[in-house]
Amino acid sequence: MSQHLEPDENTALLRNENGKAFKETQEQYKSRWRSIRVMYLTMFLSSVGFSIVITSIWPYLKKIDLTADASFLGWVVAAYSVGQMVASPIFGLWSNYRPRREPLIVSIFINVAANILYAYVHIPHSHNKYYMLAARTCVGLGAGNVAVVRSYVAGATTLNERNSAMANMSASQALGFILGPVLQACMSFIGERGVTWELIDLQLNMYTAPALLGALFGVVNIVLVIAVLREHCVDDLERSFNNINSISEERVEVTGDAEEGIDQVAVVTSNLLFFVILFIFAVFETISTPLSMDMYSWTRAQAVYYNGIILAAIGFESVLVFMAVKSISKITGDRLVLLGGLVIIFCGFLILLPWGNQFPKIQWTGIQNTTTNGTFSATTNVTSSPPRNDLSEPTGCPAQQTWCQYIPVIHLAQYITSDILIGMGYPACNVMSYTLYSKILGPKPQGVYMGWLTASGSGARTLGPVFVSQVYTSLGPRWAFGAVCGLVVAAVVLLGVMYKRLIAFSLRYGRLQEQVAA
Image (tube, rainbow, N blue to C red; front, side):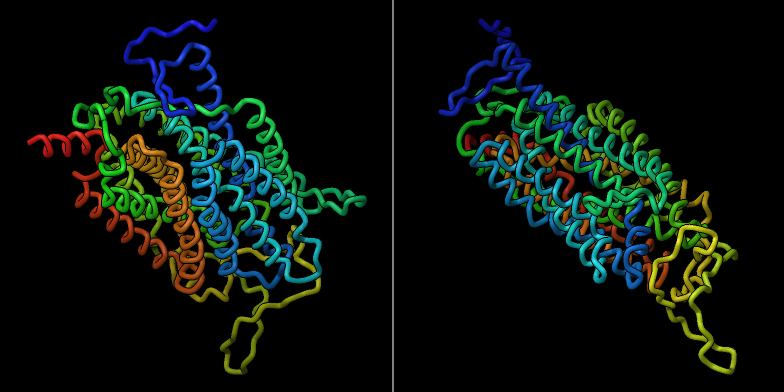
């Protein structure tokens, strides 16, 4: 017989299938946290599956299809988010009415199939870039399970546990973000040629191996979801708990219809802020590889390797930030941490603005003189085979990007300093936006709401890459990063205006009850 926990404030109340509340036993407590840890692992593996190819997409795209340019790269990166934006509300709604295991297994299976497709996009004789676009869209569809994961953790934790659980989940995501680029950097030693398995027409190289490893991780994830995950739902309606943040966000006993107490203005504001946060990071992760190749004359292999190391370092920094946020938010509250993160991100992009009188090396390969008076026009020499990864590979800032000739170089010290600041500000904003959103919603089932939040983030990750690739290619980094700085300022203003409304559901509902009683 299971031993019952003492009925203190640390004992969670669970709801059974009939909606009745009961105190959890020690065995149920262990099962609940095993399931939550499977969700951590799901988030970790999803993050690995995304980040393991992010630094190599641009070199791989240039290798398989010579017609692809930096503008099309924006669409390829955005395709992931389009898929996630479409799938997130669907999976969130599905999880509200059916066991969460179902949407999780289906979504992970889609992810596995998409990664396998990504490994084969070099096979067709034409239109390879569109096959890559389709593969990344399907990977995004599979990533729509993030809404299910976050709603599960929000529903399976008490208010006391939620800040820590959300921070741990974000830390798991950051760990995946660390491991992905590290694995990609390690696999860069396989080279562009790699080895070929002729029986199944599979080419294993520095571009396809990470995707296939991501597919393997997906299979492991499916097995764990089937074997370990169980449904658990903490009943916050029957018992009050004190929040770990501050007295001003204290939890009070809630009765009646939870929906009536939700501040829809705060919900919309949270979605807008989350959109800005994800938009900013999407810009950063999309442009890092093209920017470094243009500014520092790195080859494709060097860009994959060095940016893999840089992103891994940022991921490690993010984990430290997630751990610090747990303690800092207890003292300052969630909203101040979010504000501080936005200020740090602003500083990161401000530093990234080009200055000085040193200019990047111009890549003149492919330029043909078309006049007799000394002027020239930029045309691309398209050959029948892709460029090799050797000394003949052209490097530098392409002359087709006319701004290369008058925009100063972004120094490596600027680039690294910016990476450090963005790697500090983004994780703080990310975890606080999710935590605040969960508290604003309160005890209501959060699957659909989390689906809309994920869709909001996916919309940002759709528009961010398209925006930065178009602006960067046409106008250069000064306009691209200057616009991002302006967007961050707008987000800070919005947060300041709506600051008093971004409070926990329990506090707002308690105030409404007091007004009714008065």
